[in-house]
Image 1 (spheres, rainbow, N blue to C red):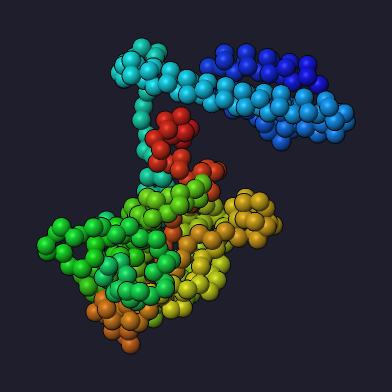
Image 2: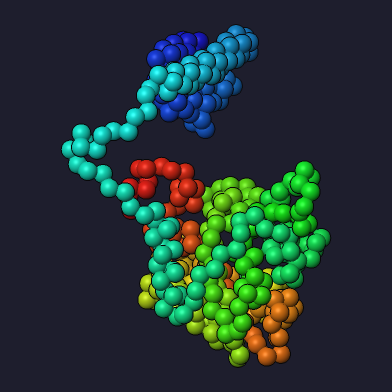
Length: 348
Ligand code: PHE
């Protein structure tokens, strides 16, 4: 047993001290301390030993464990420092294109491409583009959309507020728009029905960033107001959108969902593009994926926009182009779109 411990120690110490990358060190760490690591498994053999032997082996084992942990930590720091040094001395010059033998050509970002397709699709139906500011008032982003201050529905949008304590002339609280719905009231106040407008723009949220959530995200939204607009139009537009972007066989399904500025409100699901409804890992076995939020514009919101709800009705409909791009191009992590990784972008 003693020999075994000493052997592990010598064997790994040498490898660790020679390691040149963090990846290599992670591998050694796992080989030692992972679930089936050599150090992890050793104590399982202790019960076989005599009492005296155990008294000897215990401290040796602990020492070895600490030594190896420390060695990995030290080497990690060393590798990091080396890479910083390299960065400092490295010159950042753009490679002359000809010297690589072939010309490098840029192209549109995959999300931009998809957004252009969306805009084209709805332009065909007579929708025009309209974008509201990124920095906006609580009024346009929340209050006029039927979400008063202190209302629990505000929790649906984790909001980044702007500190205006040093600014004298602010019209109430300012924030970074959490959704393209901040364009709704402006559209209603600027145009008379019939209205066919779309907004495609960047929005911001105080998110816990992970593979499906970003603090900076794109949204696409339409506002359609006329006499006699109804849920059937909503169903039609949803399916028109999914078929146009994701494929002819992608049906749409409306499910009741609460948003304060629409009534009735709907979660809009698209048939899962991977299993076509059979149920798979991506859709969690349901056969459908939630792709948009929508509904009939709430009468109070129409009134706030200066439109008479006894004459006109309207649809608001919003989706996330990045989520659609993830599905369309099979991208697993939403962060890939904005982290500037050329290797990723060059695949498109
Ligand atoms: N603004 C909503 C969101 O950010 C989406 C939505 C738009 C819902 C239009 C209904 C109508 O989640």
